[in-house]
Amino acid sequence: MGILFKIGQIVNTHGIKGEVKVYPLTEDVNKFKQLKTVLVDGVEKEILGVKFQKDRVILKIEGIDSMNDAETYKQKYIEISRDNEPGLPPDTYYVSDLKECTVFDTNEKELGRVFDVISTPNNDVYWIKQPKELLIPVLRDIVLSVDIESKKIIIKPVGEWQDED
Image (cartoon, rainbow, N blue to C red; front, side, top):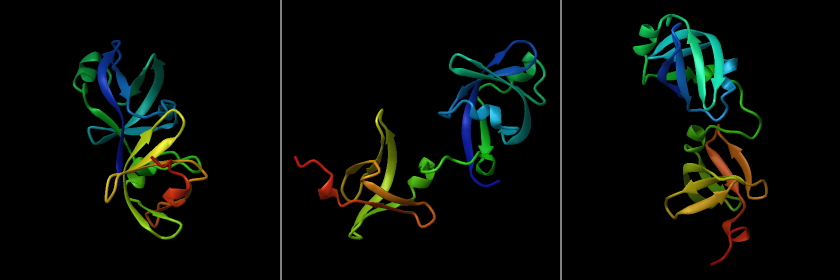
């Protein structure tokens, strides 16, 4: 199966025909429209219908045909296999991949591994915890290359962009 991504959690039933109300765990809820199948409780099921309601997604999933059926799926996660994930736009990466990368500067100085990616209104920030805490704004003139294959991120030397205290 490969890597699975949780893209939503079933939080409630919807109506009497077995539709389920899903709390999306993905930034782009339109992704639900592109999916043909999902894994619910590890079982692959076809998506028969998608509607949106405020901050929730209403799904009609194969095999869930009544409110009682839907009840049994409450709190369960909806997952997709990474192989089914639509291709990412250029210069966009999965946080899970970035967290496996080590950051170097252009002088080949190793700065540490990405611990997490923080989203801010202006740009993402790569957070390195060790050996020394460092927050790297993900901007074109700072982050020069991201190579997921070789797990390597190259940035401009810190002294050239970080504000000195």
